[in-house]
Length: 112
Image 1 (cartoon, rainbow, N blue to C red):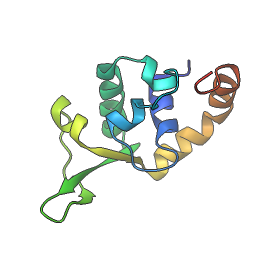
Image 2: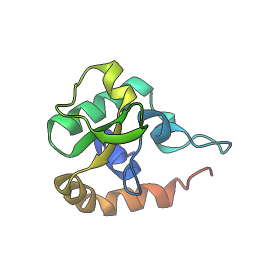
Image 3: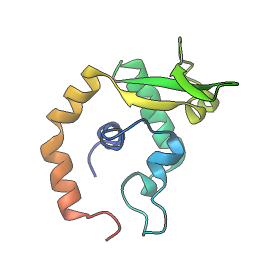
């Protein structure tokens, strides 16, 4: 498996994601980040946040819309509550790792 931080960036390729949505694959056999302990995913998100490769968003009440968490907290509870998306630097790191990710997904198709 590629590095966990690269796998998390890959999980953010399509949209904002939370720890739960990064790991949830519905009714198919677990694959990718679903095979990794939740705490390890939280630690990877913390590292990505500190490195400026992702940004954190939180649900604003009572309107129930997402807004940037400024400044974001890096504790486990907050990281499990936030939604994440990559920054421009995060996308560059993801692009640089595409060959490694493509090789992994080719060898381990989702839900296979």
